[in-house]
Image (cartoon, rainbow, N blue to C red; front, side):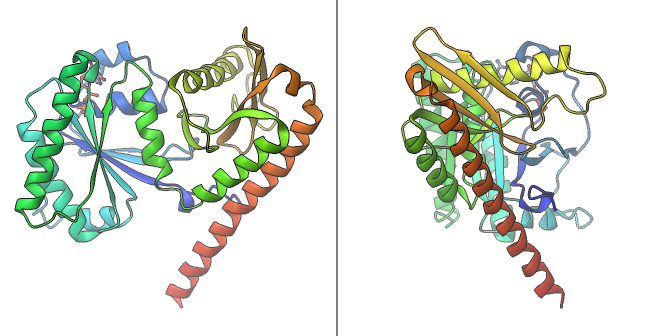
Length: 329
Ligand code: GDP
């Protein structure tokens, strides 16, 4: 059985007004489009653009506003969709007047909450590359305040909204997505524990577990993350995938498989080491040169780590299957 079948994948809904940037986010994060190319994306009129990325750990859908979604339209079964959703990301264009977006956000969140109070509500204050640092902070404060005031006025202050400043022109969109996805992984504490054990036994400085296709990291050890380290990880993933796509064996299937690995010595006596974990996931480690001399030890510990993580996900599939079985009988 495939421990990464659709039933364990986090399900995410991306919503927001037309032109807020949803397709661009999808193309940049999941389809490796360069941010400048999104300028030429055509507007679509479809309500819902499904992205059943079989190649990613994450499963998500896009919905457009306004007009297309009428919460009072009985033929539109939004209830069923909200029930199966783990996180609802609402995208607000920070370079535009956001009053209508805020009204839509309120309507969406309150409707979704009624159906499924367990959804995580995530607000992306998007396109902040166009704002000065002061303006960014002020915009975030203002949106935060207004959105929460609306909830308080409706007597729904128990609904929690999280806010992120994002742009497709830097890594902030990947960072934000990583945080959203991490909240949806029930095995996260176990994964973090395994990563901590792995690095302390192998003399590794820092490690990330990445969804290769999207460059979202789904877990890391407990030491702090800095942006530069994260960007280096994204770069090594790009190198591996790009070289495999361009020069790899044609017809060999995916550009990423069991044998995928990369070792890059950096100019600061650190080694960057990437290795395949599952068909979606890779481990990226930062190792000091002198520790990397004991690569045999690292690889042995890696082998144990990989076995453990596969078991973690398999147990979850079994639990879900048996629950499903019980509810059917
Ligand atoms: P959608 O209708 O919500 O799917 O919006 P699109 O993805 O079509 O985006 C509308 C426009 O916003 C496009 O011209 C994008 O290039 C632009 N856009 C998207 N994200 C960003 C961003 O982070 N910064 C800037 N400056 N423009 C963006």
